[in-house]
Image 1 (spheres, chains in turn blue, purple):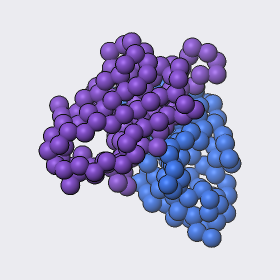
Image 2: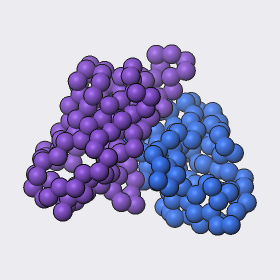
Image 3: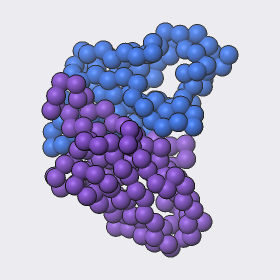
Image 4: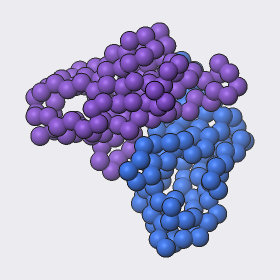
Length: 113
Length: 119
């Protein structure tokens, strides 16, 4: 079946450090891939997306590249800020038999000043 | 409304009681999802409605859980004979069906959630 696996958190970094949050997936067909973010006290919102292999999604300094050969969609940011502290969810959306969206378990990021 | 609306925002109930949670999706969104998020954990898929197709109920954890949707509008998630392990935030999301237009990428728009506490 379809599934998403993320690295476990929490991840604690100092401000301006480099961030990587790993995400791998298992899916039939050619899913779209997403990163959602949940800031403290707020609802989930889309951070970035990629709809086909080799696409790079980017937003707010975050990037992720859709790697079909490694079934991965790792999230990266070159220099994190305290305001990036949040929970990050990797997700896939199938395009066969409907457009069901499956989420990973989430990775909590703490950024210290 | 402008966004996905859920009610109630908070519900405290006693073990064994039934509860109903409501979701009003964004107008025109054909897809509607329910997820459960236990404290400090990820999103657990419950059920997915897409237009007039049969819903995908594969994530419902037991027969105490059910959901309905009226056409492409309001959805209700019902939990019968609630148990303490049902305590969680229940999130609803809606989206356009991707592929119908170039701009539709399947992004989900989430409500604020309904926090359920079973005593």
